[in-house]
Image (cartoon, helix red, strand yellow):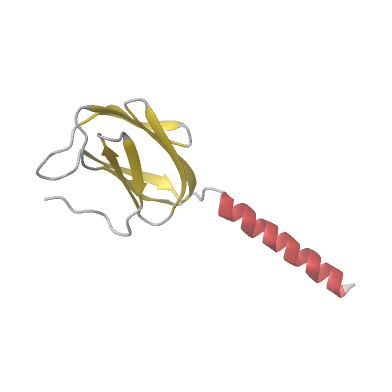
Length: 125
């Protein structure tokens, strides 16, 4: 009987950890999204979990190599990011943890959107 109750307890604890891992924790940490190079009056829409967080035209500064730096306080958790540039959309899932950095670049010649997650934020002079 003790084996069954220990197994049941372990299952319950396992489900709690799984639920907590999927849930967005109410701890807000910096989420920084950089729109990088090769933006030239491109219309950009960025969504997190279908909520629009940016919708505007973006042009990269040739000296700095960046178009926009967006900084938010967002709860830690898993998100779907959707980036649409001139009608071309790319979606990815990522885990937002302590101070997550997202870098979005756009290749105008191939119309390819690239989303990367650097370990450290880029510094622009």
